[in-house]
Length: 139
Image (tube, rainbow, N blue to C red; front, side, top):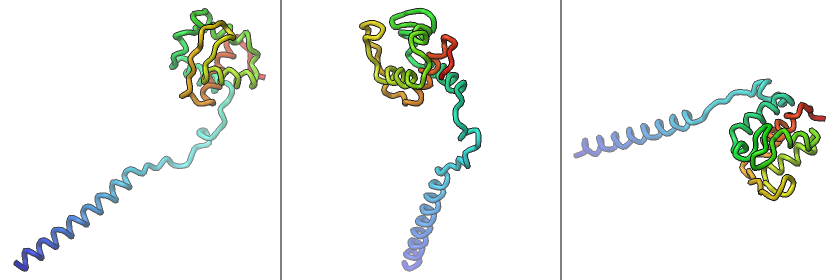
């Protein structure tokens, strides 16, 4: 009987050590090392990069349901928007707000749905892309 108690104690101790060791390995395995940001990753986005990223965001969104780059569908063409608004920081911020909040009245009474899940930065990239379509650069 004494050897059974001793074996039980050894078994429980071994299981405890194994459980503790496995748990700490799992924790260590779940911690990813992303390293130090590279110069490229921390570099500011250039105007051209913002426009290219904005184009990708527009193409990946539901914008094409109501807007086309050159033809009016439900809403104005993106080129018509570019012609209406001067390519300034103020207009980029204004249009980004419209993209996020939606609205109506500027181009007619049809309501443009908002996109509240977009960040301000992404909406501004989209606005920069749209405003670039008439060939104007930001000033």
